[in-house]
Image (cartoon, rainbow, N blue to C red; front, side, top):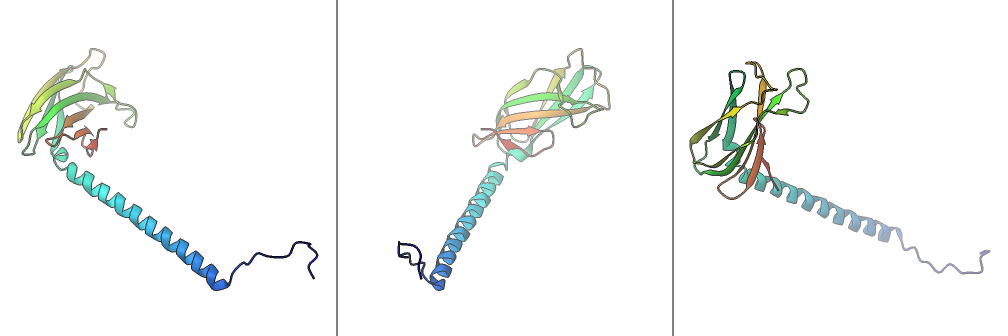
Length: 162
């Protein structure tokens, strides 16, 4: 006996119909997640290929006295790198996870040929006296032969600059 004046007109279907609907939704979700994973993998491969030359560009800092810093920027690739900006920063010995302090103004080099090393000398600001045990990080920003702009901090991996 139905106590409602409105008759039940909704047909909820059968159990196989429900299983079919859930299966369809699950398969669409599965395809979506697979495509998303494939797109991420391709982007990662593309970035890895683009960074081939960028990984071959590095810098090493050498302390020369209390106020002079020599930075050797090496381009180990066969192609030149362009528009190189070099910034030397001092890592505080008592706070290695803190923010590094800029030692001097950035230096710029227009072009470093392939298989070449460019030496840059920085005169450190008077308030920062260097000691032989100090840790100096070098920030490199440069453009590779294909026109991609990169940023590299110390020995870390190069990151694309947008």
